[in-house]
Length: 194
Image (cartoon, rainbow, N blue to C red; front, top):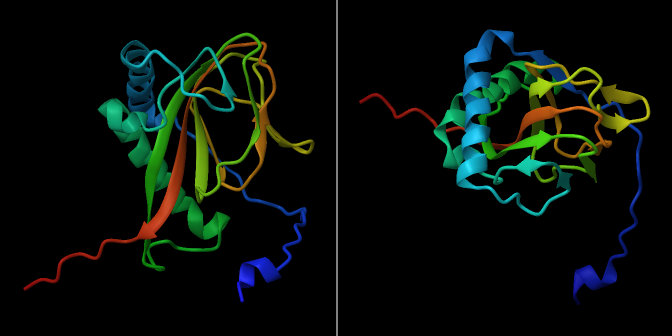
């Protein structure tokens, strides 16, 4: 007997409080500047935006960090921020659990007048984030729900579980962002001293 044909799956929606991390990134301004340069360079080397729910003036390829090494320092900082936030935000020390985090997708986007992103999530990513490199006053917010709206500020990171639904309404102003998807993986154990 095929079990999957005998099982009836019923979906449900549950309202829950999902922790969102907000970090001010002023201390790593040099990494933000490198990321901004990378987006401009990617716009020249890879001018076609991929098909996605991001409706922006430009979106770089999904794995831009592998195409332009200037994004790697920011990726490393985001992983460090996630590890530092994990015990408080998600009640778990990744290192103590034998886990590490890895950025598998990283892309940049330039939003201008009326650009937007339709409602979506980043599953199966464990964590996702957006780093605001530029954000004009009054530009469109990051909307998780009617009660959870984040108004962008330059040099700020917003990190959230990959399952969190979110969207960006049409923007009246310019925003330049880097977004990332982070995945848990088994931590590499150091080689035994011999």
